[in-house]
Image (tube, rainbow, N blue to C red):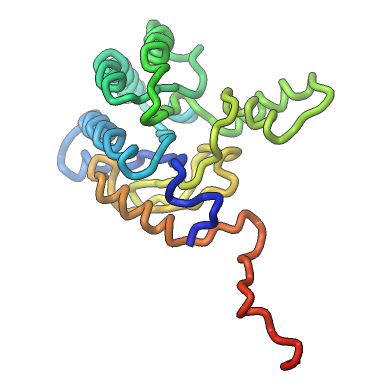
Length: 246
């Protein structure tokens, strides 16, 4: 069971690697772009379900720094979907108390998207029901490398201060659970610093198929695990051997 420091009463930080859009589509004779469109619908479902299931921060891996290697047409379609999401979801996010933050590089994004991101972040800044972080042009290794470069100029450094350099945010809770859909079992350069002690959950479900019940199942498995953070499980008195029996 969970330790007291990560009880069910606390809001969790969950990261999701949203994998399987393309395979979901091709298995149905659809274009990969149609799979990504279906994936956006899943984002809506999970963002709505997350606060009801004890999640306070949700980080979604939308586009990695290595995804630029994909075919130009697919990359262009993904950027169009990002632009569409930023233009059409903000009011819904505000209405539902969701604060949006986009992490990753912005200098390589197509014209206008960085500005749209800033506007969406400003519009949703007061959201308190859920902190939605979307990783775009993101690399955890690059984030750590950039933080190290900044830290080199400091005379003293704590783990908390370095964490802020990595994440760009003070007081961000470490990741409790990382979920990856589609059956793949790797982290793919996602939240390597914040997820140092994250529990991992892999599911065969493709991202367009993933729903609130799948999130519930992942969280149930998480809550059933014992998290020791490098320590040992506390020994209750009746488990301590009596000296008279030694």
